[in-house]
Length: 292
Image 1 (cartoon, rainbow, N blue to C red):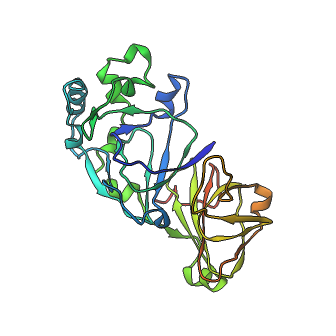
Image 2 (tube, one colour):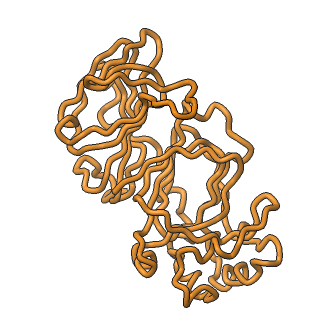
Image 3 (cartoon, one colour):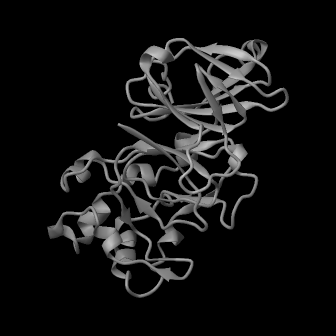
Protein backbone atom coordinates (compact mmCIF):
# COMPACT_ATOMS: atom_id res chain seq x y z
CA UNK A 1 0.00 0.00 0.00
CA UNK A 2 1.22 3.49 -0.87
CA UNK A 3 0.79 6.57 1.29
CA UNK A 4 1.39 10.08 -0.03
CA UNK A 5 1.69 13.28 1.97
CA UNK A 6 2.98 16.84 1.89
CA UNK A 7 5.15 17.91 4.81
CA UNK A 8 6.20 21.46 5.61
CA UNK A 9 8.35 21.44 8.73
CA UNK A 10 9.48 24.73 10.23
CA UNK A 11 12.99 23.51 11.04
CA UNK A 12 15.22 20.54 10.18
CA UNK A 13 14.18 17.09 11.37
CA UNK A 14 16.54 14.82 13.35
CA UNK A 15 18.81 12.31 11.60
CA UNK A 16 16.92 9.02 11.55
CA UNK A 17 16.25 5.83 9.63
CA UNK A 18 13.22 3.77 8.71
CA UNK A 19 13.66 0.07 9.30
CA UNK A 20 13.85 -2.63 6.64
CA UNK A 21 11.17 -5.30 6.35
CA UNK A 22 13.39 -7.70 8.27
CA UNK A 23 13.92 -5.35 11.19
CA UNK A 24 10.35 -4.01 11.17
CA UNK A 25 8.92 -7.53 11.18
CA UNK A 26 10.43 -8.07 14.63
CA UNK A 27 8.02 -5.47 16.03
CA UNK A 28 5.05 -6.52 13.88
CA UNK A 29 5.44 -3.75 11.29
CA UNK A 30 6.41 -3.25 7.65
CA UNK A 31 9.59 -1.55 6.48
CA UNK A 32 9.32 1.98 5.15
CA UNK A 33 10.87 2.99 1.84
CA UNK A 34 10.10 6.56 0.79
CA UNK A 35 10.90 9.18 -1.83
CA UNK A 36 10.87 12.97 -1.83
CA UNK A 37 10.00 15.57 -4.48
CA UNK A 38 10.09 19.34 -3.94
CA UNK A 39 7.29 20.94 -6.01
CA UNK A 40 8.38 24.37 -7.32
CA UNK A 41 4.83 25.69 -6.81
CA UNK A 42 5.09 25.09 -3.05
CA UNK A 43 8.67 26.26 -2.59
CA UNK A 44 8.82 29.95 -3.37
CA UNK A 45 10.64 30.26 0.00
CA UNK A 46 13.31 27.86 1.20
CA UNK A 47 12.64 28.03 4.92
CA UNK A 48 15.43 28.34 7.45
CA UNK A 49 17.33 25.15 6.60
CA UNK A 50 16.96 24.07 2.94
CA UNK A 51 19.44 21.20 3.31
CA UNK A 52 19.07 17.50 4.07
CA UNK A 53 21.72 15.31 5.65
CA UNK A 54 21.94 11.91 3.96
CA UNK A 55 24.04 8.88 4.81
CA UNK A 56 27.52 8.80 6.34
CA UNK A 57 30.93 9.96 5.23
CA UNK A 58 32.81 7.17 3.45
CA UNK A 59 35.18 5.56 5.90
CA UNK A 60 32.90 6.04 8.92
CA UNK A 61 33.18 3.09 11.29
CA UNK A 62 30.35 1.43 13.17
CA UNK A 63 32.20 2.20 16.40
CA UNK A 64 31.88 5.93 15.56
CA UNK A 65 28.09 5.70 15.47
CA UNK A 66 27.94 3.48 18.56
CA UNK A 67 29.93 6.13 20.42
CA UNK A 68 27.35 8.75 19.31
CA UNK A 69 24.57 6.60 20.79
CA UNK A 70 26.50 6.22 24.04
CA UNK A 71 26.61 10.03 24.34
CA UNK A 72 22.82 10.37 23.95
CA UNK A 73 22.21 12.01 27.34
CA UNK A 74 25.30 14.24 27.24
CA UNK A 75 24.02 16.96 24.91
CA UNK A 76 24.63 16.94 21.17
CA UNK A 77 25.91 13.47 20.33
CA UNK A 78 27.80 14.77 17.28
CA UNK A 79 26.41 12.36 14.71
CA UNK A 80 26.06 15.07 12.05
CA UNK A 81 29.88 15.31 11.96
CA UNK A 82 29.72 11.89 10.29
CA UNK A 83 27.08 12.85 7.69
CA UNK A 84 26.79 15.11 4.63
CA UNK A 85 24.26 17.88 3.93
CA UNK A 86 22.95 18.43 0.39
CA UNK A 87 21.29 21.66 -0.77
CA UNK A 88 17.69 20.93 -1.74
CA UNK A 89 16.63 21.95 -5.24
CA UNK A 90 12.96 22.60 -6.14
CA UNK A 91 11.81 20.43 -9.03
CA UNK A 92 14.03 17.48 -8.04
CA UNK A 93 13.91 14.72 -5.45
CA UNK A 94 15.59 11.85 -3.60
CA UNK A 95 14.99 8.14 -3.15
CA UNK A 96 15.32 7.02 0.48
CA UNK A 97 15.28 3.23 0.96
CA UNK A 98 15.06 1.69 4.45
CA UNK A 99 18.19 1.82 6.58
CA UNK A 100 19.53 5.11 5.18
CA UNK A 101 20.14 7.95 7.62
CA UNK A 102 18.46 11.21 6.64
CA UNK A 103 17.52 14.51 8.31
CA UNK A 104 15.01 16.35 6.08
CA UNK A 105 15.31 20.10 5.60
CA UNK A 106 12.69 22.82 5.25
CA UNK A 107 11.52 22.66 1.64
CA UNK A 108 7.86 21.66 1.28
CA UNK A 109 8.07 17.99 0.37
CA UNK A 110 5.79 15.69 -1.62
CA UNK A 111 6.57 12.34 -0.01
CA UNK A 112 5.60 9.01 -1.54
CA UNK A 113 6.09 6.06 0.82
CA UNK A 114 4.91 2.67 1.86
CA UNK A 115 2.11 2.97 4.43
CA UNK A 116 4.28 2.38 7.50
CA UNK A 117 5.64 4.62 10.26
CA UNK A 118 8.61 2.74 11.69
CA UNK A 119 11.65 4.86 12.56
CA UNK A 120 14.65 5.23 14.83
CA UNK A 121 16.30 8.54 15.69
CA UNK A 122 20.11 8.71 15.74
CA UNK A 123 20.52 12.42 16.58
CA UNK A 124 20.16 13.43 20.22
CA UNK A 125 19.51 17.18 19.77
CA UNK A 126 18.01 19.38 17.04
CA UNK A 127 18.39 23.17 17.20
CA UNK A 128 19.17 22.93 20.90
CA UNK A 129 16.19 20.71 21.73
CA UNK A 130 16.98 17.32 23.35
CA UNK A 131 15.24 14.26 21.96
CA UNK A 132 14.18 11.32 24.15
CA UNK A 133 15.85 7.89 23.88
CA UNK A 134 12.35 6.52 23.35
CA UNK A 135 12.51 7.88 19.79
CA UNK A 136 15.51 5.62 19.13
CA UNK A 137 13.87 2.44 20.39
CA UNK A 138 10.22 3.07 19.39
CA UNK A 139 10.39 0.24 16.82
CA UNK A 140 13.17 -1.85 18.36
CA UNK A 141 12.44 -5.16 20.17
CA UNK A 142 12.40 -4.66 23.93
CA UNK A 143 15.38 -6.94 24.51
CA UNK A 144 17.52 -4.67 22.30
CA UNK A 145 16.55 -1.29 23.79
CA UNK A 146 20.11 -0.74 25.05
CA UNK A 147 21.91 -2.94 22.56
CA UNK A 148 23.98 -0.44 20.54
CA UNK A 149 25.28 -3.14 18.21
CA UNK A 150 21.73 -4.14 17.30
CA UNK A 151 20.57 -0.54 16.79
CA UNK A 152 23.51 0.34 14.55
CA UNK A 153 22.97 -2.99 12.78
CA UNK A 154 19.67 -1.62 11.44
CA UNK A 155 21.66 0.73 9.17
CA UNK A 156 22.30 -0.26 5.57
CA UNK A 157 26.01 0.32 5.99
CA UNK A 158 27.03 -0.05 2.35
CA UNK A 159 24.35 2.40 1.17
CA UNK A 160 25.05 4.95 3.90
CA UNK A 161 28.78 5.03 3.16
CA UNK A 162 28.40 4.93 -0.63
CA UNK A 163 30.95 7.39 -2.08
CA UNK A 164 28.59 7.80 -5.06
CA UNK A 165 25.54 8.46 -2.87
CA UNK A 166 24.37 11.49 -4.86
CA UNK A 167 24.42 9.64 -8.18
CA UNK A 168 22.56 6.63 -6.80
CA UNK A 169 19.80 8.38 -4.81
CA UNK A 170 19.24 11.87 -6.25
CA UNK A 171 16.39 12.09 -8.81
CA UNK A 172 16.18 14.59 -11.65
CA UNK A 173 12.83 14.44 -13.48
CA UNK A 174 12.78 12.12 -16.51
CA UNK A 175 10.38 12.94 -19.39
CA UNK A 176 7.78 10.25 -20.02
CA UNK A 177 7.93 10.92 -23.78
CA UNK A 178 10.10 13.20 -25.95
CA UNK A 179 9.37 16.71 -24.64
CA UNK A 180 8.72 18.29 -28.04
CA UNK A 181 6.12 15.61 -28.85
CA UNK A 182 4.30 16.17 -25.56
CA UNK A 183 4.36 19.95 -25.93
CA UNK A 184 2.76 19.71 -29.39
CA UNK A 185 -0.17 17.95 -27.68
CA UNK A 186 -0.43 20.57 -24.95
CA UNK A 187 1.30 19.05 -21.96
CA UNK A 188 4.52 17.89 -20.29
CA UNK A 189 4.90 14.85 -18.05
CA UNK A 190 7.89 13.65 -16.05
CA UNK A 191 8.75 10.77 -13.78
CA UNK A 192 9.72 12.36 -10.45
CA UNK A 193 9.98 9.21 -8.26
CA UNK A 194 11.24 6.15 -10.11
CA UNK A 195 14.08 4.42 -8.29
CA UNK A 196 11.93 2.28 -5.95
CA UNK A 197 10.18 -1.02 -6.67
CA UNK A 198 7.52 -0.09 -4.10
CA UNK A 199 6.07 3.04 -5.73
CA UNK A 200 6.51 5.69 -8.40
CA UNK A 201 5.31 9.23 -9.09
CA UNK A 202 4.86 11.60 -12.02
CA UNK A 203 4.33 15.33 -12.48
CA UNK A 204 1.82 16.25 -15.21
CA UNK A 205 1.52 19.82 -16.53
CA UNK A 206 -1.40 20.67 -18.84
CA UNK A 207 -1.04 23.96 -20.70
CA UNK A 208 -3.69 26.72 -20.50
CA UNK A 209 -6.87 25.99 -22.45
CA UNK A 210 -5.72 22.50 -23.51
CA UNK A 211 -7.57 19.18 -23.28
CA UNK A 212 -5.49 16.00 -23.34
CA UNK A 213 -6.05 12.28 -22.89
CA UNK A 214 -3.61 10.42 -20.62
CA UNK A 215 -3.29 6.65 -20.43
CA UNK A 216 -1.88 4.77 -17.42
CA UNK A 217 -1.59 1.03 -16.80
CA UNK A 218 -2.52 1.13 -13.11
CA UNK A 219 -4.62 3.04 -10.59
CA UNK A 220 -3.08 6.05 -8.88
CA UNK A 221 -3.62 8.88 -6.44
CA UNK A 222 -3.47 12.49 -7.57
CA UNK A 223 -2.84 15.88 -5.94
CA UNK A 224 -3.40 19.23 -7.70
CA UNK A 225 -0.63 21.72 -6.88
CA UNK A 226 -1.41 24.48 -9.40
CA UNK A 227 -4.34 25.70 -11.48
CA UNK A 228 -7.90 24.58 -12.13
CA UNK A 229 -9.58 22.26 -14.59
CA UNK A 230 -11.46 19.01 -15.06
CA UNK A 231 -10.26 15.44 -14.62
CA UNK A 232 -12.84 13.20 -16.20
CA UNK A 233 -16.16 14.57 -14.94
CA UNK A 234 -14.66 16.14 -11.80
CA UNK A 235 -13.82 19.77 -11.25
CA UNK A 236 -10.33 20.14 -9.76
CA UNK A 237 -8.34 23.07 -8.41
CA UNK A 238 -5.45 23.91 -6.14
CA UNK A 239 -6.94 25.92 -3.25
CA UNK A 240 -5.43 29.22 -2.10
CA UNK A 241 -6.89 29.03 1.42
CA UNK A 242 -8.24 26.01 3.31
CA UNK A 243 -10.25 26.68 6.45
CA UNK A 244 -10.77 24.10 9.16
CA UNK A 245 -13.48 21.62 8.24
CA UNK A 246 -13.70 22.64 4.58
CA UNK A 247 -13.51 20.16 1.72
CA UNK A 248 -11.23 20.80 -1.24
CA UNK A 249 -11.05 19.62 -4.84
CA UNK A 250 -7.32 18.94 -5.01
CA UNK A 251 -6.98 15.25 -4.12
CA UNK A 252 -8.40 12.30 -6.05
CA UNK A 253 -8.07 8.56 -6.62
CA UNK A 254 -8.12 7.31 -10.22
CA UNK A 255 -9.21 3.70 -10.66
CA UNK A 256 -7.40 1.36 -13.05
CA UNK A 257 -10.40 1.43 -15.39
CA UNK A 258 -10.50 5.24 -15.51
CA UNK A 259 -6.71 5.48 -15.75
CA UNK A 260 -6.70 3.61 -19.05
CA UNK A 261 -8.09 6.65 -20.88
CA UNK A 262 -8.54 9.81 -18.81
CA UNK A 263 -9.42 13.20 -20.29
CA UNK A 264 -7.96 16.23 -18.51
CA UNK A 265 -8.80 19.86 -19.31
CA UNK A 266 -7.10 23.03 -18.15
CA UNK A 267 -9.89 25.60 -17.78
CA UNK A 268 -7.53 28.55 -17.32
CA UNK A 269 -6.55 30.79 -20.22
CA UNK A 270 -3.23 31.74 -18.65
CA UNK A 271 -2.10 29.32 -15.91
CA UNK A 272 -0.79 25.76 -16.09
CA UNK A 273 -2.68 22.90 -14.44
CA UNK A 274 -0.15 20.79 -12.52
CA UNK A 275 -0.95 17.36 -11.05
CA UNK A 276 1.24 15.03 -9.00
CA UNK A 277 0.41 11.33 -9.50
CA UNK A 278 1.58 8.49 -7.22
CA UNK A 279 1.50 4.79 -8.09
CA UNK A 280 1.83 1.58 -6.10
CA UNK A 281 4.21 -1.33 -6.72
CA UNK A 282 4.13 -3.35 -9.92
CA UNK A 283 3.60 -0.46 -12.34
CA UNK A 284 4.83 -1.87 -15.69
CA UNK A 285 5.52 1.64 -17.02
CA UNK A 286 8.23 2.31 -14.45
CA UNK A 287 11.19 0.59 -16.09
CA UNK A 288 13.87 2.70 -14.41
CA UNK A 289 14.33 0.70 -11.19
CA UNK A 290 16.28 -1.99 -13.06
CA UNK A 291 18.45 0.37 -15.10
CA UNK A 292 19.63 3.11 -12.69
